[in-house]
Image (cartoon, rainbow, N blue to C red; front, side, top):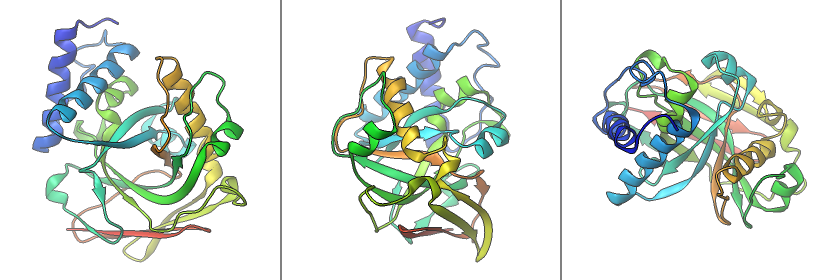
Length: 262
């Protein structure tokens, strides 16, 4: 690590306050170019501690930048991980207030819920599928705190991978018998198709995203507990939304998820 604990805590407060106060900030590596990968995740961990001390519950984990489309869009090459919160959950068909966000974007995702712990190194797709309780459709609303979504990988890790809101569908199925790799997804905004993709867009198979998460956590001596909700990452590029928009995502075998922005 390059930063001392006092600086890590200061940056965590800075970014967490930006989220809560809905204001843009410049990416933190502008002022701290020496910030390394361990620093970035240490800042994210401190943000989690700040939230938990306030009574916020961590509702699950998430992977980010797992599709080639998102990597190209954001100009990065490696996936990253973060966490999702109880206050970020929105009911299927529910309302999301844009006044509570900065510059939201949506992306359709395939979510997993585990029934057994997963720990790396050596976690692979087969291990993940055996440990999966069920899969379900989801849409994540990301909302980077950085001006104009301008960031580098270390800055966005520290910002908890732009986590903001998420919507889960009511249909869930066991992974057995579903071709998750070729599962089709259609994202619509205001009745128009804005993106299409398949599960293979996420690292070749969405379960590979969970395996990578387990292996990344394993490098830090951590694991994915049983019963964990995991958002595996957007299958397409993120789509900007504003007040008045209605978004829906249709998932082959898994049904539909929708929300409206006010």
